[in-house]
Amino acid sequence: MYLGLDLGTSELKALLLADDHGVVGVAHAALTVQRPQPLWSEQQPQAWADALDVVMAALRVRHPDAMRSVRAIGLSGHMHGAVLLDAADAVLRPAILWNDGRSAAQCAELTQAVPDLVRITGNLAMPGFTAPKLLWVRQHEPEVFARTRRVLLPKDWLRLWLGGEAVSDMSDASGTLWLDVGRRDWSDELLAACGLTRAHMPRLVEGNAVSAQLKPELAQRWGLPAGIPIAGGGGDNAASAVGMGLVAPGQGFVSLGTSGVIFVCSDGFTPNPARAVHAFCHALPGRWHQMSVMLSAASSVDWAVRAYGFADIPGFFQAAAVLDGAARARAPLFLPYLSGERSPHNDAQARGVLYGLTPAHSRADIAYAVVEGVGLGLRDGLDTLSRPPNARPLSLVGGGARSAWWSQLLADILQVPLALGAGGESGGALGAARLAWLADGGDETTVCTVPPRRGLFEPGEGTGALHQPRLERFRAVYAALKPVFAQGVQ
Image (cartoon, rainbow, N blue to C red; front, side):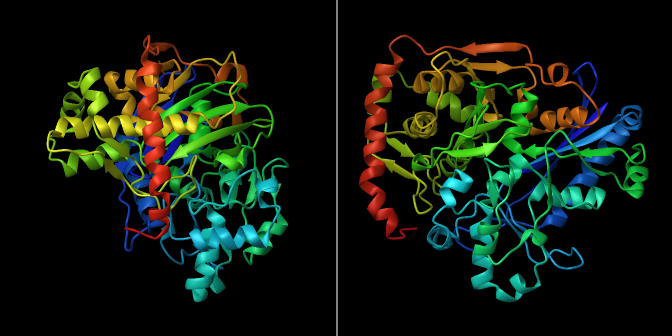
């Protein structure tokens, strides 16, 4: 039995995985994001520990025998966050999250200070990454920076709380802009540019390696065996890929969560920073991946449901699905940049836009525009990635994948087959449990299997030609508004 913990932006999930790949139990605890100023996005790390207590107590009540049989724990979590600790490992300020956009100016400063940044990291400096966040703290909260003795990523703060060890894995560390991604080691040059050294950084391990042991008092509290190992784990997307068995070159997925992600595995370091593609280490040794990221995917749907008074998300999709081909062609266009955008624009100032509204448009037209806009944003990202000609279908995961109508629309827009696999909704928690299994001595060919397929969405005949004019107008609207966004319009 293995335990996977996935620290998401909106919830913490715990999953119990049996040796036959069966999911024995799952527990969730909700989390909230604080936005005290425009572009800011923060959470209190203590809220993560409190949520962990909630899910572990729930699993102990529901599955006491399984909890007593756990042999290892794995960790997954949202990337790029900055948790600042003092010499006693006390938290100095709220964690700055991945979707925080305050550090655009610091990105430019870091790029100028380290001309080799793109070569070393394989990535452009973006406000979502960890390094510019520390530069921002250094400039705007100097007393906090002066007291900082350790910087951890969110899931790695949980590891410190669980096992007392400051450790990160290669996939999560890739999103800091302090890692030499090709060499899988910290870059002293990039750390120095932020006023930091290796002493501020956690020890690095591969995601399938043992990183710590669970504290005895926590094992007793939760009904777990004493001293069980904690695996290195992975960033949320790399861990999700492991959970879906996507570990070979050319395999990949589309994730429809708060953010939208297209992830493709590779056996080498293949950066494409000119298009704001992320090139990161995978959670397993000797492998990397490319990733395009849009910041507002399913969160765009959540916004539209609230803003336009839909009763619920199913009702929203039902309204959008009413539109036929001719009505879709007349619908407004939606730019889904509610929190800025990463791939392919790297534009923290970009904003959400409804373009082309007329008195004839209804709530249904707007619903379709929002759903389509997310798909067009994902298509922008897909077109930046390197995929072999014989690439397999991409797996489709995340909360948005629960809508068969949206899944088919995405296949039509992306012009790529999308496969639904059993267990895909478990995301990073399943991958974290599998990494725990590997850390306990499991064999990769046995552990990292591809779950059975439970659905396949093929692009419809002629849909490429149908969506191409909308895609071209979508891109033209962004290009026209980019200078306006640069003026800081809120």
